Length: 407
Ligand SMILES: CC(C)(COP(=O)(O)OP(=O)(O)OC[C@H]1O[C@@H](n2cnc3c(N)ncnc32)[C@H](O)[C@@H]1OP(=O)(O)O)[C@@H](O)C(=O)NCCC(=O)NCCSC(=O)C(=O)O
Image (cartoon, rainbow, N blue to C red):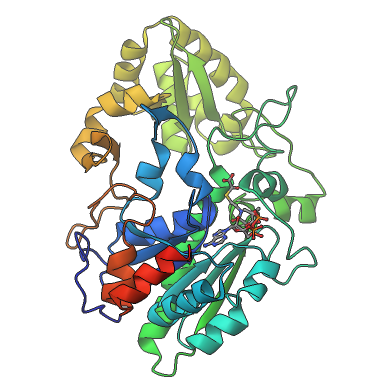
């Protein structure tokens, strides 16, 4: 990995120390990929339009006029402003491309071509650059230039059809699931390309072309091979797995009105449930017996959980080695000892809000952990650092660019 040899502010720690990333990306998916890299120590420069910046800045809940989500979404990155409508802006964009190891783009194909941020241009400017391009339908698709949002990707992926109860409408999960998973898979792809680069002296760049529907589609287990081999279209089945129901898997309401998930995926764990419910263990010895007895187990669990408080249920489940969990709210997460033991909730100082709590860096690396060294920066906060100190633009040049609204 090339070192920047530059002052990296509070970062410069973690597995990706010295990796240079520039993001011409907005809203959730692309910036999430950059966020994953930034959490592990990469120097990530988020390029935003002057004025309002990335629309993600205004998303989500607000406290005293301060939007909260961007404090997490933009964390650990540098924010620079640059108007790509200006030729002078595009020239600086190309300098950033030349500077970077990794370029993340999520603007639509036509715009990328107009602004010379498509694969051909990026590869010409920086032949060793790794380009992560996220789009609605994929750069090779006949729909390459169409706009796309994560919910469309979720719907196309097959996940939404499978989510919900059979007698209800299909539902999306309660967060930007498709976008987040696309960002995560984008980061994974970048690391695969970096591995290749590290072992190949002749490395001549890579173009990662990821459509918003593909990551979730890749994760939907047996749905496609089932359709192919059995002709069966998996249908939503509530908390059960479509087509091949598990012996134990559901949510149950406790006597004090909370929800508890119980799940068992091995022979022994299902036997543990049978024993706890007072059912004859020998009737639940084989997977065929367990499969057949799943409705008895489900009904038994429903009644057993309803007759107890949540705390009683969880204590008895733990004693019987039955895997179960309260269905956590955000308040439960913050109060939970295991989250605390893991250091998964951190407090970071923010210029607008003071100390704020948010998710820590995940996953944990024991020897060279990542770090959250700043919350999402103000728009253009790092113009001077990136343009002057890193790219070498003169102070007067910056003043002029600012005057003309280019940065
Ligand atoms: C998100 C989009 C639908 C937005 O489409 P559009 O608004 O038509 O934008 P385009 O992609 O065509 O890019 C041009 C616009 O980018 C904006 N833009 C962004 N950065 C800049 C800079 N630095 N300078 C100037 N303009 C900029 C500006 O508004 C441009 O509009 P003009 O002023 O007109 O030139 C699309 O970018 C897209 O499909 N992206 C790929 C898939 C993706 O990442 N989707 C979002 C996932 S997150 C999500 O789904 C979610 O949040 O929910």
